[in-house]
Length: 254
Image 1: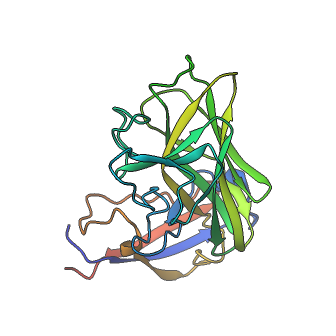
Image 2: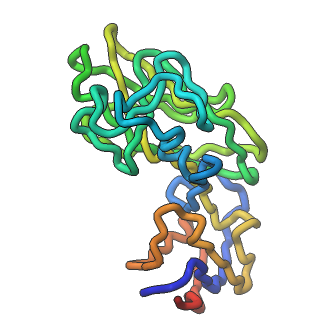
């Protein structure tokens, strides 16, 4: 189905459970990606670590300047096919974050409104790691709060997802921290970092409260939108005593 970047649907929701959100009841709720700001010339470049674009030789740099991220001395970026990444291409684009040893990459992010969020990333161990077996974790923090820590177990990129966490509205510092769990030289790669706003359908910001409500989603804000919808999935609610109806779903066409 070819449509433009706006899709609308009419929802009618009724619930009888208490209107108290928790991490448990939003863990499997629907979500919306919140793009990490990258700035010109590529708004989504920070999420995929494309800024700054590195030269072909040597193709990697520690503490590179000119992008939205700040790096500790053992953190940086690498292109595909370098002495670091070898035959481990980035899942998205042609650059990845490199976290060697105890290292950190940080960026300022703005949480658009208070609510539950989840963090996703794709990460891999360096195949040519000098110390074998490699022992690397990736930790995510917001300010001084730990959001999650993921053990890297493969040289293929694997998607990792944090548990739901309630965040207040405002600007804070997001950090990705490399944690070595054994002595030696251990390196991990990270790509496709995402912040997901979780939509608990008890949330008054997204619920219809017993009446039909039209929700419009601007798919143009999603970096992977290519103008074609191949399927639709709705995961509206969980719990007893909840009714969910969809009157119509439509897009305005090309």
